[in-house]
Length: 236
Image (cartoon, rainbow, N blue to C red):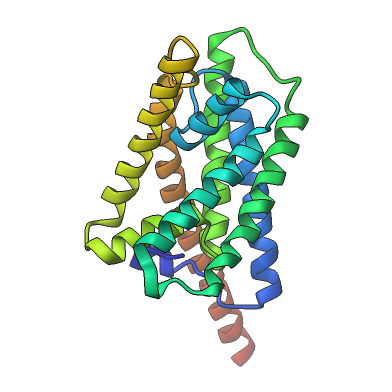
């Protein structure tokens, strides 16, 4: 799951059980952040805007269901791009995708009563939601387990094309945003859920993840220093 050297520095190489717990907790926190961002009502991420828009096009299906359908599509596209490199193990990506879809629907239900009229409160809620979203992603990176189909697709394109991973991810997000807007114009009278919060999300989540990396490294150094001092103290 680590795409850069700095990400490798926070990878947990310990117990598989602990890593799976970290991963699932990360998914839950991620979906809580997505849910609160939706409740803020001033724009959500490109991926969420597409699946949320689809709930207006055909309401009987939940956003979690649409999210899982999107992950299925990405797994198919991964197969088409990867071909011989695609293995049966890749289907394991559907497990966390299903967990994410379930947690998303659960958190949307739990946050249903949250709603603010004051723009300042909506803004603060979105800032907090993006902090949770970023922390959830940080925990999933740290667990270093199965890639979600969407990330798997981006990684496959990265390996096939040699383009920068960040550029591919940005292009992918922009494509989802354009599709969401197009569906909004065609079927709903205009784009939905694409506002200033969408661009805030694009900026804040990345910055939050950088902050968590920084704090983790600081804590790691502090713990290492404390342990070293303890050993020196015992040697006397």
